[in-house]
Length: 528
Image (cartoon, rainbow, N blue to C red; front, top):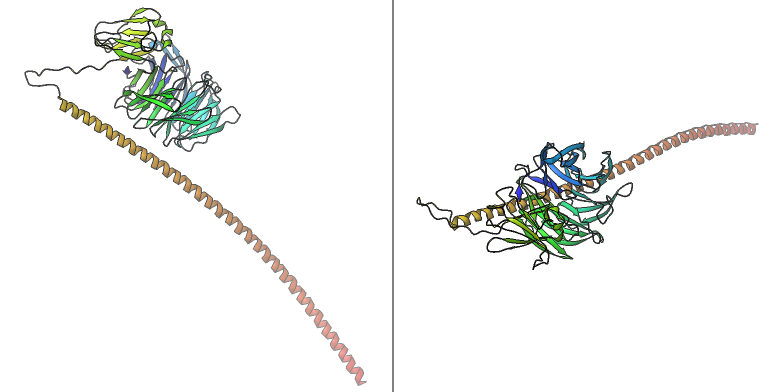
């Protein structure tokens, strides 16, 4: 089922499911945060329009605490109270707001531990910051990415790694970094490389035996990483344009992803192989995806402002007969919901878009399905549609033949096959143009990144040269000092030499005078 979710055409940039998976929140470019019940009535239960800019990140780490990030660099904490007397049975109370949490630059991702004590945020200031929810003080700043950090995920207490001890981040530098926050000074413990484009989203599985990281990128791939050996396990290709968002189930063997190519794809993983399926396909880019832990339900957000809930076929088998009736085989744990405990229950028709005609009856039985051996849910009527009203929901229709419309007396008719094929051709041409533009944007971004890297390298080279010049200047200055010292010594030596020369001259003159005196006396003696 698709609905505007209160976003009124603004691109839905982020989605988060509550830990109990009975409601979800979505944020959009209009600054609206919408709260909706899973499988509930069409439309939002409650909307918050507290942001003056794009809501870029949301996280429901605890049932009653919502963490939000926006394009102004603010991190907010809001308490969500369900079943209140307020509008829609929901009450939202803002607890605190950290303004300019990332030096007034955009918040790109947010994630919290399930007990709600620590929240991590990533931003365009090239770092990840951890915050104490109680004191709103920064715990640590994680630096190491070269460029914007696009996403962040924190391990919860149900993950294979200890709660809050592992932080995973991805960025424009095409790397995924793992951070150990147990020490007083958090440190980077590993750097996962493989993506050739920006890493737009990362997510953690909770499998106790083999914990996983799933990531998606502008390189059109979804990748799975094994946390035990810190190696890439699988590269899943299929999307035609960049992949914006990805979610993984609890066991780490099933993922869903949304892309600019307008498709929501599921990925069933078995070792180093995978099975891909296109779950939804349209012209609208999918920017945000969330999924239940058992992989039964996905919630996706679109560039047009639409929010869609999809029952994934990984958990449901569908079979339609000629009359339009249907048999659905759900996962076993669907019968844990109170709504499905009775053998038979009426389906109320909330909107005409679900069942057209008389409201059918839903039969819930423990009879075994011939295909899977699981219990079945049956529903059907003349509209050839079906709906399961519970904590989870299925709304699907089999293909209908195009009815023949007779021409009127005025000679008008429905568009013929040529017109329809022309429209389809226009649509294909438009999609082809969109793909070309995406490729060009990717090329421009890569060129800009290369130019930035060259600039950084040039600055580093200039700094090295400046350091060498400064070192040479210091050496020249030292030599000049030595020369001045030597010159002074020479001058002092010359003065001493002049003094010695004068003394020698006086002594020589005195000696000559004495010699002459002696010679004179000798002459006088000889004459006598």
